[in-house]
Image (cartoon, rainbow, N blue to C red; front, side, top):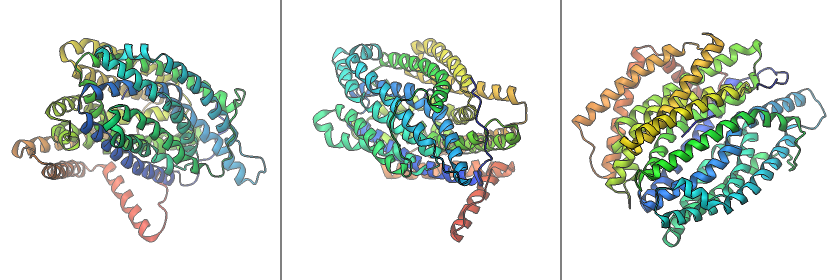
Length: 551
């Protein structure tokens, strides 16, 4: 969950498209729907892994081995999508739209750029993956220093099988970037769900014979399914692979991404340190941290990631033009308020109800009481960072939208130093929870520093009532926490899946009601805005009319 992350003159900015707010709302709704599907599939994936392998050494070695392709993907492709691909692709898509509207006969520019980026990505990824497959043994020796030799040998095999997925995931990321730039968000929104389903299917079908090896085969199948899912979305975009380093769009993407790559190298070092230390704190630590991270990432994907991906193309089209500074500022503030409003009750619920949540989601099959205790402990330390990470993702998107990738990277380097200091200072006394605490401090500090930098650069103009909204949301979150604590004291969580599910539904309803009630008493404009938007959307849906601009 680490978020470690030259300004280039932008082309002449175009006027914002009509109904940019409607476009954000529609895109965010589709992405949220996709993230719900992905989150549910992610829960099912982790439930499947937990039921089959619990917090065993096999589950932990899979967690360690799967971090190798993830680090390679993040370094070479994943970080480029929001920092460079979507902003530059969006600019080229805007040019093509403008040319088409003016009746120009020139061919569109976006397909040539996408083909050049995809060709370059494949030319880098295929040789690198081949080299890493050969050197998988020293990689696992670094990551899994705390594992027994036999477990490390299994990890080497898992790394070698999983690494080719990086090529498929890289291809998928390029396709996703162009589809987001074209506002064709439906297929990429569901790509993560397809990836998770591939892992589930292979685990269920093959684990009896192959053990944890079935999981990395699922990684390959899921990555291939991602590519296959998104290809139909490229209708009307004639792609031809090429390696053209002289293409101005490719050169701009490389310039924008260079500082991000430097920051991700630091993030990779943090992940390596985190994995190495976690492998020394117990055989179940990495597995428990993975399960807790899944619970935290669900609301993040549903709220923050959806808002940032939906907002980034619109912010990119506003650009850095002073004439549209108010629109940029208003769009960003709207996203920040919505993120805080929606993510805070999730954070409170996961902190207070962590035990019942972990039992309901994971306590099946091989996942027993030890797994519940370890995962609940990790969740207690992970969940408080949720509001900070939600804000952080939108702030990073804002910096990327104005094609300033340098500041988030510098802040990411500072965050890595914070992580190392806290982790090394607490792992000896706290064990695994010290590593989770270090991650939470790192991500929260990243958000605070970015906020202060934006405030310093723009003065008070960009805030648009953000501090008042944050204060009201914090008070409402505190009231929700009190209600949930009192409820647990008066009515302990029952046993049994159905009773536990009913308990969590009722507890969530009680806590959520308290949250909304306090916001109403405080006359929260943010709550009124969300309510009005939902009412308007339902009214217009019944009439068959589109929702008007909200930005």
